[in-house]
Amino acid sequence: RRRHTRLRTVTGGQTCALPISAYGIGIALVYGALGLVVVLTGASFGTLNATPWFNLGIGVVFLVLALGMFDVILIDLSRFQTRMGTGGGRGTLLTALGLGGIAALLAGACVAPAVIGVIVLATDLYARGQRAGLLLPFLLGVGMGLPWPLAGAGLSFLPKPGRWMDTIKSGFG
Image (cartoon, rainbow, N blue to C red; front, side, top):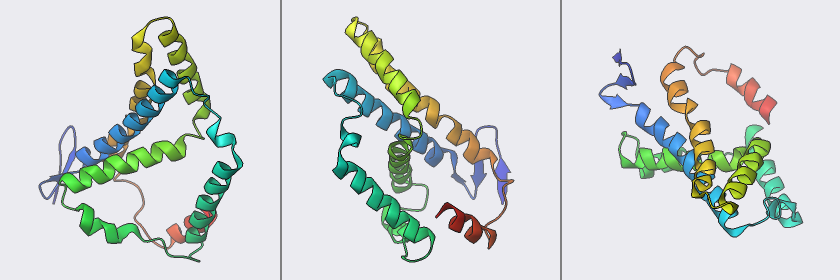
C-alpha cells in the first residue's frame, strides 16, 4: 500500500525522504568540513593526491571494485544491514549520512574544477576578512546534495531490477 503526499512517499507508515535527506546532508558535511580545513590551514589542495602512495591506494580500491563488478570477488554489504538498522530508525539515518559522505569523497575527482573554484573563492574571501567565505564549501555540498531527496521521491518509474542489470554491471566493471 502506497500513499503519495506532497513532500514524501509513505509506504507502510515509513518515510523514505528522511534517509535520502540524510544522504544529501552527508555530502554537504563532508564538503563543508574538508573545505574548512583547506581554507583555514592554507593547505595545498592537490598535494595529497600527487603522492604515488595515494594514487596506488586509489588504484587498489578501483581494482577491487572492478573485480566485484565482474563477480570475481563478492562484495556483499547487506550483512551490515541488520547491524545498522533497516526500519527507518536511527541506524538507517546514520547509514545514509555515512553513504552520502563516502559519495562526496568518491565524487570529488569528478567535480574537482567546481570544488577548486569554490575553495579558491572561499580562501580569497576569508583572507579579506569575510568569514562568510568559510560557508562556501558547505553550500557547494548543499547544492550537490539537494537533488537527492527529489530524485529519491520521484523515480518510481524506473525499470525494475532484472538480468539487464548484469549487463550494466559488467559494462561499469
